[in-house]
Image 1: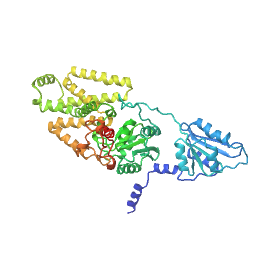
Image 2: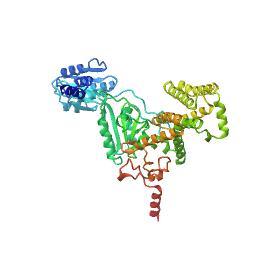
Image 3: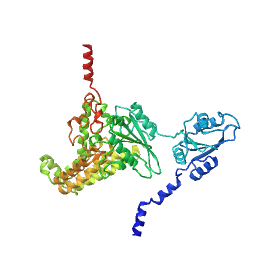
Image 4: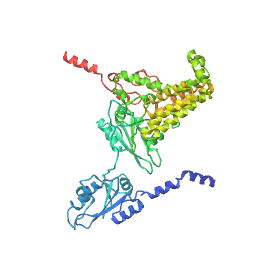
Length: 529
C-alpha cells in the first residue's frame, strides 16, 4: 500500500526542473519600500544576466534616490534618457525638503511617459522582461513600469508564401502589436474584440484571440479560449505549437486549422464569423474553424473576375487528384489493367520496358523518392542555388535515368505532372499532406492493383468524414450537402450574389452580409416615380 502511495505521489508531483523554475520566481512577493532591498532582490533574481541594466540617480537636488532597471535591447535607451532621467533630474522641483508620494511622482515627474504602478514582484518581473523600464523610488513600496519597448524587427512587406498579382502587398510580421494594428486598421469597429493571453511557463508568449463579437459564434469563441487556457508547456516558439495543441485530431495527415501571412485574408475570415489567433514572434496567423475546400482558396480569388476564379479553382482541385493518384494509376495500368491502354501506347510502353530492370511499382517508388530528395534540397539550400538544383537537377537526373534505361520516359511525364499538381495547391500544409498521400496509394496499388487503390481512397474519405474543426464538419458544405452554401467553395459566385455568411461559422441572427445592388436600384426608382 505504501509503495502504491509513493508511486502516486511521484506521478502527481511536478518534475524537479519545474519545481526549481517555480522556486526561482518571485511567488507574489510585494515590492519593498527600501530601495536597497529592491535592488538586492532583483540583483539576486537576475544573477548572471548581463543584459539587465541597473541605473541609480537622484531626484533633482533632493536626497531621494531612484533606481531604473531595464533590459538592454528591449527598452529604448533614448527614451529613458529623454523621458525618465530628464523628468526626474531636470524637470523635477528643486527642493531638498520635498517629500514625494506615489501619486505626485506618477502625475508630475513621470507624466511624459506611460507609467503604471506595480505592487508585487510577479508583475514587476513580467513587465521588465516584456521590454518595459522599471522605476523604484526610495521610501515608496511600489514600482512604476513604463512602456518604452523598442527592438529591431522586420518591416511590413509582402509575404513570400502568398504572393498575389492583384491585392494588398502587406503581410504580418514577427511583432504582435504590428499584426493587431494591421487588422484593426481594416476593421474600424468596436465589435472587433482582441483578447490577450500568455502561454508558456518559461517563454510567456503573448497570444491574441481576435473575433467579431456580433458575427462569430459564441460557442466557438469560448471553446478556443478554454483550449488555450489549458495549454501547459515550457515555451511557444511559433504558432504551429498552438495549432497542434488545440486541434481535435492531432494524429491526422490533414491540417484542421488554416494559417496565413496576409492581414486581408484574416480579415475576410473574421467577417465570416471565424476566429483568428495571433502569436508573438511569428508572422503566421491561425484561422478556425475551417473546411477542406478553404485550403484550396487563394486570397486573390476575391480580387479577380469570378469566371477566372472558377476556372483556377477547378485546376487546383484537379491538381489535388493528379498529385495523389497519377503514380498509382501508372502502376495499375502497366501492371494489372494494361488492356485499358490504347494499343499504340501499349506497344510504346512495352518497347521501352523490355530492357528496364525494375517493376513498374519499384520504378515509380524510386522516382518519387528522388523527387522528394530534390524538393527538400531546393527548400534548404540558398535561393539561387536551390532553384538551380530543383530545375536543372530534375532534368539532368531524369534524362540520365531514361538514357541508362532505369525508368520509363512515360513515368517521367507522370511524375512531372504529379509535381505540378502539388504546386497548384496554394496552402503549403495541405500541399505537404497531398505529397504524403500518394505513397500509401502507391503501395496499395502495387500490392493489390485497382482494388487496393479504391480501398485506400475509401479509408481516406472515411477519415476525412470523421474530421471536425471546432465542431464544424471538415467536408461541409459538401457533406452534409447544403446547396445554399455552394457560392464560394468550388466556384465563386459574383460578389453581389454572396449576400449571406457561411451558416456553419456565423451567428444565425447575423447571416446577412449585404443587400443586393439591384435592390438599391429598385428603391431609387420607386423614389423617383
